[in-house]
Image 1 (cartoon, rainbow, N blue to C red):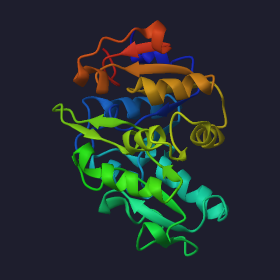
Image 2: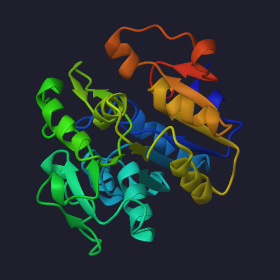
Image 3: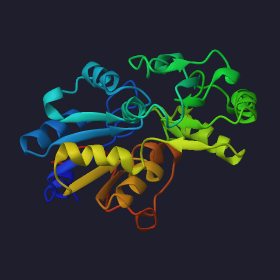
Image 4: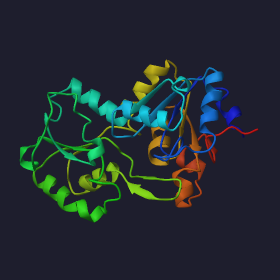
Length: 267
């Protein structure tokens, strides 16, 4: 079945970024043409990403990769949703946070003067977790920090529920979701913002103004579960994380409505 046929009955699309549109540094083949086609067909696209940073940063990445801003309606990132939720509720977790993540995302709350980055564990109300401390950090290296945070009884806010992402060349990088799940297994309190949880989908539906939506993603644990729990159909892109892992998905088991190897048009 062609992508053109799959999208025909839907009024709008919610599309993942990493694994469908790009791998962090390069576009997947054909996606720019696909987005242009959807724009011509009057089918608005909202990008929904578990990127642990404000949406403007994601837009800049798309600009650099050559994606026309006229060809999508907006970008929603888990980082932006976390930023907005914390801006509205200063009492949820407290206002002093211990930052656990790479330096590139440490500015996520920089525009919120009510929040202060704690100097140490003992000075914090909660943990803001955007990922590992640096790209490709070994998991074992961060375990002492998790135990220290647990001893301080700090709740952990995970703003990227993905366990991992992969690049087109097969390189794997662990994400905040892996740390958050480990923290929960150790007995820590964990709060998640991002796919597959409904708060990010509600924002997408509000932007699109319709529930006749197709969700497109490559990760069954986030994209497909999120679509299922939001009662919308889904298109699984098998050429993303599953292809890199060498997995053959059982579509009935994982709940995908459709599957294609890539987010591209077929002549």
